[in-house]
Image 1 (spheres, rainbow, N blue to C red):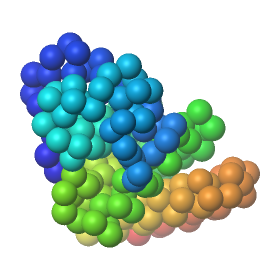
Image 2: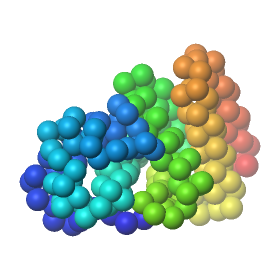
Image 3: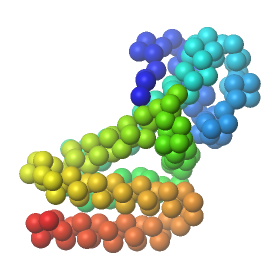
Image 4: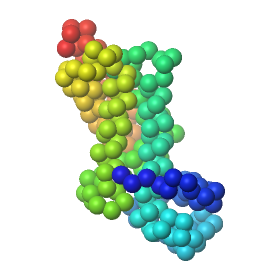
Length: 198
C-alpha cells in the first residue's frame, strides 16, 4: 500500500490532519474535495497540488488512519504489560470497545471493506496490510515457543477473527456488554487451550 510523501511540508501535514478529522466525522467513500476543502479552510486546487490527486489524498488519509491503528496495537505489546496472547487480546478489546474510538473504527471498517470490493486505486492493499499489522502484534505478544509454531499461528488467527467479528458487531449494534462477554468467553477457551498445550 503506497504511503504518503516521506518529507511532507508543514502545510501538507496541517491540511492532512484537518482532512483526517473531517474523514473521521464524514467517512471517505463519498469524499468530495470541494466540501472537504471548505471545511478545512483550503481549496481543491491546493489539495490537488499538495497530494497530486484525490487518490493521493485518500492514500495519505488511509496511511494516517493506519498510523493511529498501529499506535493502538503497539500498546498491546508494551513491555510493562503481561505477555501472552490472551492478555494482549484483552488489552486490544478494551481499547476497541471504548466509545471515544468509534470514529476511527468506523473509518477503518469503511476502508477495509472498500479495499475488498475495490482492490485497485488508493484503497489497494489496505485490508491485507491491516491483517498483517494485527497478526504481527499478536505474534509479538506470544512466547517464542508458541509464536513460531503452527498452533501459535492458528491461535492468533482465531484471536484476530474474534476481535474483528466483535468489532464489526459493536459498530453495528453498540451492544458492548454482550460482545465483551463473548470475547471473554473466547479468551477463556484460548487460555484453556494454552494450558492444555494446544
